Amino acid sequence: MGSDHPTDFVGDICEAIRGSVRAAIDDAVVDVTGGNGHYTITVTSSVFAGKNMVQSQRLVYGAIAHLMKGDRAPVHAVDRLTTRTP
Amino acid sequence: MLSAETKSQIEGLIQKNRVVLFMKGNKHFPQCGFSAQVVQILKEVGVPFDGVNVLQDAALRDGIKEFTQWPTIPQLYVDGQFVGGCDIVKDLYAQGELQKLLGAEAEDVPAPVIHVHERAAKAFRDADDGSGDLLRLEVSSDFKYELYFGPKKAGDFEVKAGGLTILVDRASAKRANGITIEWVETADGGAFRIDNPAEPPSVKPLSVTELKAWLDRGDKLEIFDVRGDDERARAKIDAAKKFDESAEAYVRTLPKSTTIVMQCHHGGRSRRAAERLVAEGFTRVYNLEGGIDAWSVKVDPKVARY
Image (cartoon, rainbow over all chains, first blue to last red; front, side, top):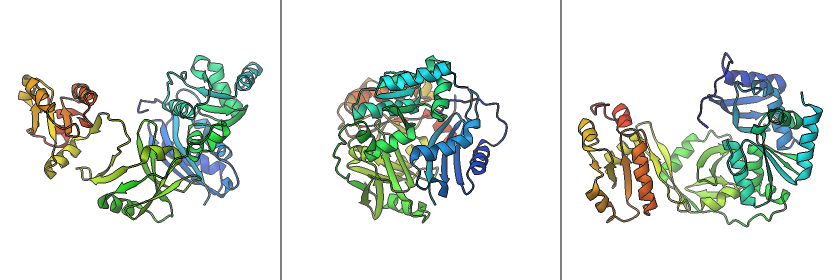
């Protein structure tokens, strides 16, 4: 999974992920690490309370879907997505 | 846009079979690490499943993402319902929930015994940020290890070791019994070393900085250089013996648990030799990653690069 993933995206991808998740989920605390197309994302928010894993992850994926679209997307894969409540 | 045609194609697929995995590649040759992990889990659970290769159909590849409202592949469907992607399937499997969902009996796994050396325990205590998260050990089906701090999940074992509590999920537990976690000094600071008696022998990667630390500490080991005389004349590690016929004969007299490090120019040829030793039954065979070149760059600049 260490292969190269070219993208046309210009800018800090980790920051773009953080910003997109925060824009979609008000109280989200977002931790993003990674690079070269592969990212690990941890989101803490009260919005996940009472939701199952699919519902919780769908909220996050929905927020960053535009960063994952197409063959030259800045986010090629999310290696690990963790959602938790504060 | 999801076309009506693709939509009905997907509906047909998830109704035709009880367990359907939309994946990259087929179940014999997954073409993506995430798909491969889910295939491995489904095989371990032992239920028949249908693998749908989305790489063969661009409309399906985009369509399934829209259909499920899920931007990644693989995607697992059971009884026509979306279960999750790789992370979720792994979690459900680790908790024994996937087995229930698939109607397979969850194996009764005993709590593993783990040993943590004092230096490693101290490193873990130092890394604890006090957030209440606990150390988690994961052992994948191909014996790759992950150690990180995280919250307790349903079904976790809480294993006490070295004054620590270590979380181990049920899937990892059966591969984690008897594990020893040590802390080894390297030029980059230090690293955890995991010794697992349950792991089938394989060639282990060794960094040049770690080898330097072993040598400085006077660890008992054998280093062999598989290169020829011409290359050895240009650059060599003093402790490395030439791996010629007499060296091979000598190796065969050693106990199979001897620590053996194989070295060459960049780490390719030595890996093949190391694999041969593993095939002969040696259990602690290391390949020096990056070879003499990495040694020159990171450990001893007096050794020439070529």
